[in-house]
Image 1 (cartoon, one colour):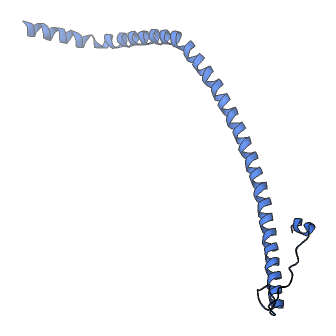
Image 2 (spheres, one colour):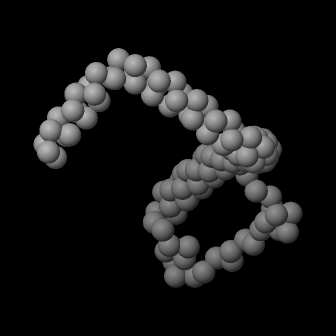
Length: 138
């Protein structure tokens, strides 16, 4: 008996499928619309507020990045100027060192060696530069 009732119910279930499918689709669409409306009504104000706060924070971050970029650019220009001045000073010092080496080499040739004592064994007085000559650079 149980099998017979089961067969009859299955046959009725299959027979009602052409009517049942469109009704189930409409019911599903209606329920989905109600749920979406409820979720939107409750969640949208919170989401809109959170998005507004996020947008404001993003604008602040972009402003900070722009200031940092300008600061980095100014710092790079300043470093470039300092390095250019330093390289010019190093070049000037190299030229001055070369001229001093040349002067020492010329003085050594004239004296016959690197000694500041004359060959006779007597020391000659060493001329000390004046204050004006000591303070002069280059």
